[in-house]
Image 1 (cartoon, rainbow, N blue to C red):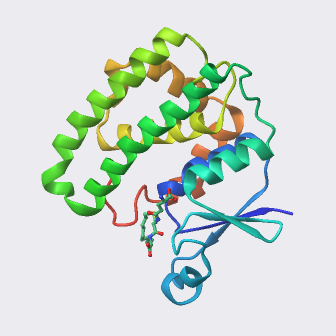
Image 2: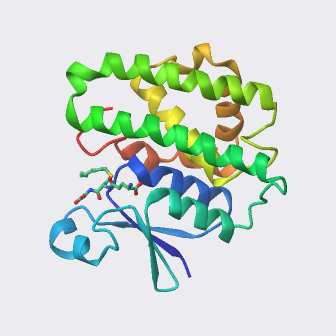
Length: 205
Ligand code: 0HH
């Protein structure tokens, strides 16, 4: 039975969830909550927000909790060394800090805040570039994890916001290209469905 994803018909915080499912052959049904969000769906969600997935009748909320759950469901390997495993969480948390600032700018002050956001996001991304070039692995660790799908989507939206964003980050550009080339992800990104979804809910990107 398919996992259901309750979300708006946008990329937003749903997109990394879509990637992890596609790349790991987890069947996902997108439930478009757009028209009936406030009246029908919001009261049914654990925290009154989306994304939420439902698997076997049980709902999971919070995008990173959902990604972690789906990574476990897919059987993604976790490093046995706790200090290597910690890399996944620290990069994911850094990415979430960047994403949080991005979302506040997109929905709050796009016109006046975009340039500063790009500048700050570059400074924050430089830390990731430096760490990941030192670690020298294909993904955040040697094997792909939930955080790689989240970081991949974050880098993608930053490139939409600022074309050429990754030009000064060679390790992350190669990392981005590696994930974009994974067959199911590549196919999806060329699909009409993907192209039809706006990046954000207010038309700003
Ligand atoms: N920490 C949570 C997480 O990571 C944050 C969730 C969140 O902010 O899962 N959810 C928002 C939707 S994402 C929410 O539920 C932002 C996109 C908004 C697009 C809206 C319009 C789309 C029209 C096509 N917001 C609704 C709410 O809080 O009532």
